[in-house]
Length: 463
Ligand SMILES: Nc1ncnc2c1ncn2[C@@H]1O[C@H](COP(=O)(O)OP(=O)(O)O)[C@@H](O)[C@H]1O
Ligand SMILES: [Mg+2]
Image (cartoon, rainbow, N blue to C red; front, side):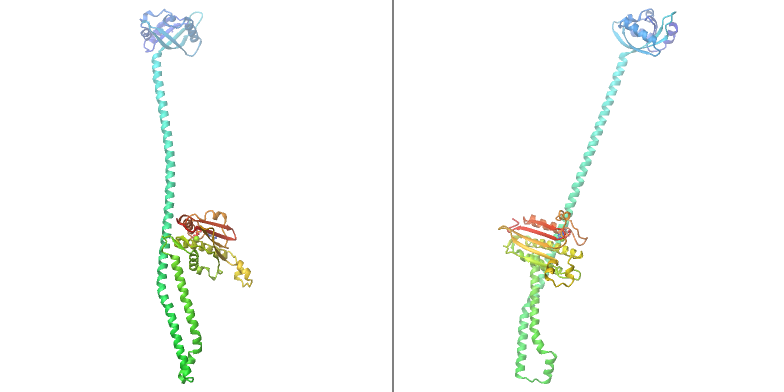
């Protein structure tokens, strides 16, 4: 390319272009170069490049050599001396367009680029990148915050769910307890009501029995007097005497009255037990005889202790000590005796189902053996010290293994089939003894041998 051709070609281009020789002499430039330098274009050809820049001649020569010996574009930096004395840093891209030859010097095309503009752009770009980075950072932080919030929310939801579940469980428990308490209270009222209703007629039967016995004795004495006065009665009377078997009647009627008396007395006993058991004074602390409470509970459970087709009789062995009266809620305490005794009976029935006590079913004459091997419940009471008493209820059923024992007093824990067990008996008993009476309830068991429940209560409890 000749300088003329170059000018022809560079004239139309907006970027500053220079054509220099390998030695650094300006051969031609376009108008943008003149504009940057603040010179007229015609003044430029023939000048040396290092006159127009601040870099040393040495640096310029080195750069131009690099340009002429490289096939690729060589990037450099030139600080132009402007006509007005100011300098301008430019980025320069140099490319050889005609290599050096012995005949002619190399021709190098330099394309200048205003560095401040680029720098500005660069600054802008940097700012953009910075902003972007910040935005990315912000988004990351937002995302993290969101993730955290989400996590916290999940934890909170979980906590709330657990709390709700607990509340629900408590409510269910309270509801069941209320139902149970309501059932017990209406059962108590019913029992007390029935006991009262039965008590009146039984009382007058019992009271009149005495008179009825007296009247029949009087009548019999009258008959005897008749017999003495008239030892040979007419045949019609003689026939009647034989028909009613008078001698037997006289002998039997006293026995009859005796057994009727025993019967009404027993009914009165039962009524007393029912009243005692159902004590409607539950809300009040009372001084009571604990043995009466146990006995009336046993009376109510009597039908379950008797031998039945599939179960042998359950022997109750009482070992009562001399106990002081205990200040307690008697109705509630009886309920505890009931729960523990009913569990013992259940355990003995389960053991019988399991084939325990075969000796009881076969006709054995060995009484000792029978006693040892029959189903039994031992009830022991004792004074621990002047402030405490203990009641122990032990059975020789199947006993309780460690796993069951650890959950015994939990609400709704039962090993019994649906309908038979509610799992509330021991839970309520525990609450009654420990919370209402400031006492202790514990269980001891040797699996396979039986279980023992020990109730310890202060003589003056509930205070
Ligand atoms: N005397 C006992 N012998 C063996 N297991 C017993 C005895 N008493 C209680 N248990 C065990 O304790 C569990 C809980 O008793 P309880 O709270 O009265 O509930 P439930 O009798 O309704 O099952 C019973 O299901 C049973 O497994
Ligand atoms: Mg029970």
